[in-house]
Image 1 (tube, chains in turn purple, green):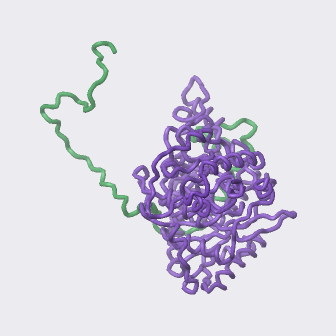
Image 2: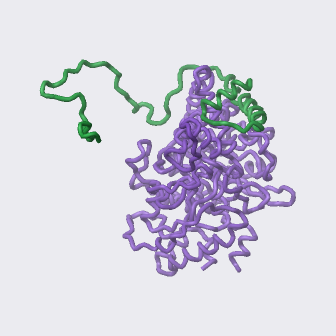
Image 3: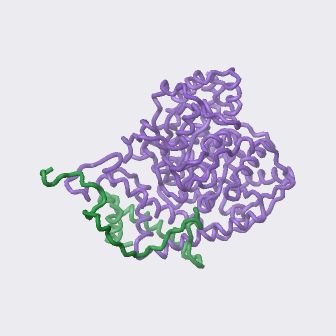
Length: 495
Length: 89
């Protein structure tokens, strides 16, 4: 049974449906393997010990289109799960057990999927390296002294190490795509609204979006068929009941009619690491060889994107995280005075990076600085959106490197938050404009004898997700790419 | 940023830093402010708008309306009283 664990979900599902594989036995093998290797990478914060209870005999809501069902998956510890602790990677929520499922978790549950557990993450999704968790850092399965990226570090590592077939993450500034790139798997952030945010612990409500990690684009599309459902609990949800992303992803691409945009700032060796750039250029050449037209696009606002992003998200974070006062959720430090109790609880419960962003948000929203920072950032955001609309009048898909660098070593960027923020250079414009992006593996670079993955980011116009998944899936087919786990994982699977 | 300003900011955010960590925190925060300050390079035109449901977000004008209580309305509250004060509850 272990030999199935590294295979694409859609292939294994075909065997389950044909009665050739018992999904309960698969679940047990997956659970045992995931727990066996987790001490090497620390991808999980909590396991769902109720695994026996998950063998429900509920009717499945099957429709004509393919769905992700009866397969083991994991969820970032930011999705609420009934009766299962949800920490958001923070001490302040270390004892919080939600009374309800996030909408996308409920959708997976309805389809008899097996939740393995909750994955590790940077606290409240604030981080780009997986080092900011109160539950210890996640390690990159490709080289365990290197970071896996963040903030959905555990979900990326778990999929890369074959601990599950698919994992849910959230992407506020690149937190699905960047760790996917660092861990050599697929990371898909849908257009804002295509997956309900009900049940996500909020960080920055205008940028937060649930996303999917998988070992192929087709698997991500299959999962999307299940988790993208209309939801009256989220007024920004724009999912369609009958959208078939899996079917769309399998349709052929007419390469000769496809126009691929390359953003000029991300072709610059001053900004992008040489090995990352080499793999990116090789990917662009593959598109061109297939018949696609390459178009270079200006992006004058590239250097302002990060500042704009950190102002807006910090402002929203300072507001969203005001609810953690020790009264309604999680940890409380008792004090005689109520104000002192708030301060003591928050000061002990939040980590340094979260405090930094709350302080920044408080600063940019304060009366004297609101116009200079927050309002200015809103106008820049609008200009970035206008730039994006201009690109998509000229091209169908924009391609960039997912991250400007290869994965880096633990501790390398902890002393300088601004250097850490630069990891998001290529991804934040997607969140600021509400559109969709996907990171697919496009090769390896070498650092100190270690092979480390790189990612290619593809971006579409808002709500052209079907086209995005189709181009990504067909690009994988074009280049003959198939996921192969890290050597030590392959050995463990064979053992 | 002056130390007093930084401490005031912490107060607004309901956070308190250990005595020993204030200096390091303030230094990193200054660097962060320098970073976000790069946004001032942008020459703003117009105002930002919500990206999500932008045109659909229509709120009615907040207007004051005269209201006359119905003659048969005996109390000045709508929600039924649940505590009987006369009985000392």
